Length: 223
Image 1 (cartoon, rainbow, N blue to C red):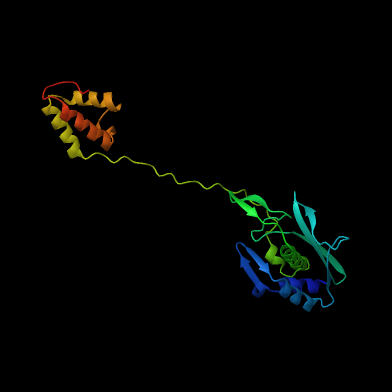
Image 2: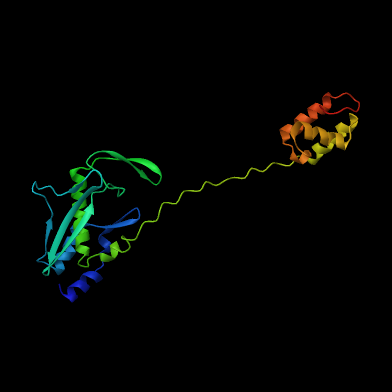
């Protein structure tokens, strides 16, 4: 493989033949092969198969892989790729459940369509080993960061302060009933385990007013 041809493939812009899917960029295998044989018209490729002409290898525990090899300029490069679904989750020969982004997801059993797609994507990636569209795969081998848990925004519940006019009305009513400020605080402490009207909810405040209204017009303890 000559340096000139390597540089030619490395510098070739194939962006017009790519498509975006989620965060990944894909190069059409047909366009990739067309551009490749312009540089290496004698190039050949092989799809690895077993004695039964089956081109996928693996098991349902770890998943399945396909393999290709390309020969050009007396150099042969091999490549491999898992059989994956449209979310790039490894498939198996049977349907199964997987966790993706913290949610349970059902993965369908792989079919010949999925295997064929994996083979052609593998071939395209194989051509990148010679330099064609290699920049597309830059960063693919970086370790994945663990999924960060989504933090739920906690909305702090704030208690709406009581209307000062209402608080004044409470003490006025207490005075009419023959009670002083200390008596009111004692009642608040006894019935609501609070130290002042500032600690009362509106419901508790209204309940306090009802208690006062029921008292006789003489000084007695709030019960």
